[in-house]
Figure 1 (tube, one colour):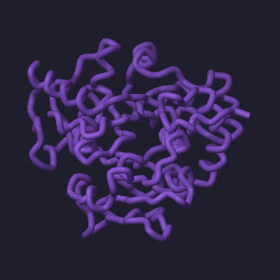
Figure 2 (cartoon, rainbow, N blue to C red):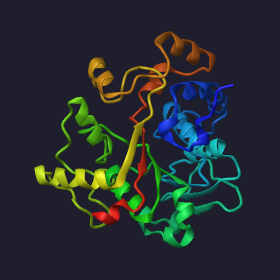
Figure 3 (cartoon, rainbow, N blue to C red):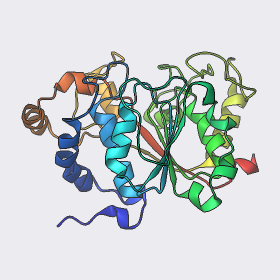
Amino acid sequence: MLASPSDSRSIETMKRSFMKHELEPFAAVYARRPGGRNMGGAAFFHYFAMWCAIKVLRPTHIIESGCFKGVGSWFLRQAAGNATNMTFISPEKPTVYVDKRPGSRHLFGSAFRDFTDYPWEVWLTPEQRRSTLIFFDDHQSGMRRAVEASRFGFTHAVFDDNYLPGFGDNWALKSFHAQAKGITAPTLWVDNFLKPSPKAWYPQSTRLNTSDLADLRRMYDACVDYYFEFPPVWHGPNRFGIGESAWKRITAHPLLSADGAQAFAKKHALKLNFEAKRYTHIGYARVRFGGAGRL
């Protein structure tokens, strides 16, 4: 039997063999998802990444910031089971799924605030915050969210909107790691659905000079202890129109070969190109406990 990496609760120990082993169990769950194709939301690759992260980390609490229709909330619950407490944050009540587990906290409508405006230090003990997984699907800057999570004492975060430099609507953590592949860091700070940051933060929506980029790098190094990008399940066209050779250079090797993907997609009635185009380098960050306090 395949040994589970969850014994150490560390993404670093997660093997590709473990992820491949989880594909069939997850596909069975994906087949009964609510909401159909979930246009405007995530799809197979990202929900599978969330599934694997939860199976490895086994968080005692999950926070979802940005629920949209609630399909992601449903996948979080399927992966975590009923023993895990969850908090859901979104401007409007989801229309497809709202978690019914007793004890779930729903912060919708009039109860909605930005992630940073809730008293996490009151609601959760330091130990609970260290065992919490935050799923950021709120189109806020991944760089800013990492700093904010660190200041609250959280440890684990997954970023759905982890866009490449020059694409998307937020300055993502991917910006630093794309540089190692020969891509220049974006020189325009973007956040909050391409709007100014929702509250005073450095920087606001301005052009970034060399000093600004160095400051952001210092923030990153202070807050992020480990970074990992979940690979696509298979290779295919991307939503940005980037050429195949360039895309492969900046993207982790897929879990399945072309032949394996064809067989898997046929077995589970999945559209190869449709699913591949929804992938945006979904990433995990282990946030250094209190790292932002050193800034």
